[in-house]
Image (cartoon, rainbow, N blue to C red; front, side, top):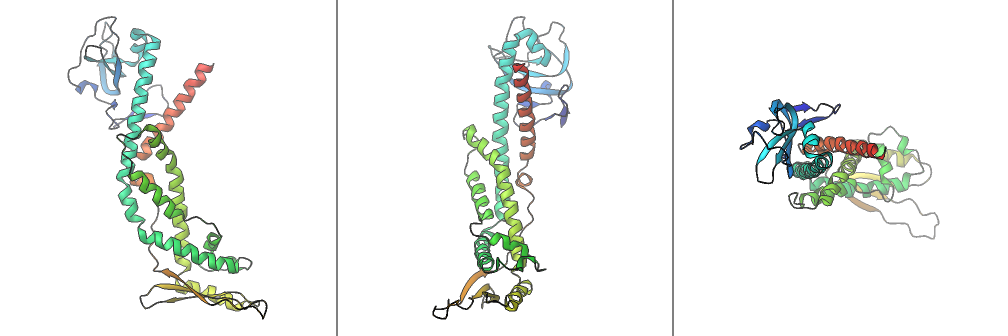
Length: 327
């Protein structure tokens, strides 16, 4: 259930599963209805935006409120305290320290939960982007490099051939984006979110957008490559090479007895008669896998996008608080 927090424009808070943000504080057992004057809590157990008004245990008139904290007292009792009452009864510095400690614990709990949610979707990602796609990526990039190296100064890339734009990925040094992104995702699966240090968990979430973009770009390149290497499309590349007046490498596709695609390269004639011509070569492409549509990493791990939105909101609040202190 979502609740708009009064005083925080556009900010949404939910029962987020960490136990540190709730909407029914009255359901907690053993709540102390009235706390003696002068008693100061030792910590905030959780915060809440209640569905119904709750009485403050620290106010003499038990002022009803909807936004506040469940606090822990030194003797083990717990009680409800309205958000505005904290400064009044605990002192501004003590209330700020309790709030800061609570926010740190809440952020860490959200971070651990977000990484756990991300890990829950990793099995789906690895199933969608399987080893067959990784193998195809390495072979396809090598094949594209062969064709690109021979035709980079020609107009082949501007020909109306399906998937021909992917020749730009044939430049030397083009990374195997899908393979690299998959390795990073696999490394995340080996992290224990319940015990890993916060810096390691933060590194995962900061790396998320980069890995997501890397996977998206890599799969788009592979989709174009799979289109280009279909025999009915690649035959236009072969025709283009044959029609050139100057000698260039001739490329063609065939299938081996197992039905696997093979790229044949017939080198151009030697520039000098005294030079020994290069022998023909064959590069194995294999079968063309189905390249999936990429929905984004946050789509496969529930609650991850909510964490990123909440983290952005909290960071904005922190920046505003620092700006106020500087003034």
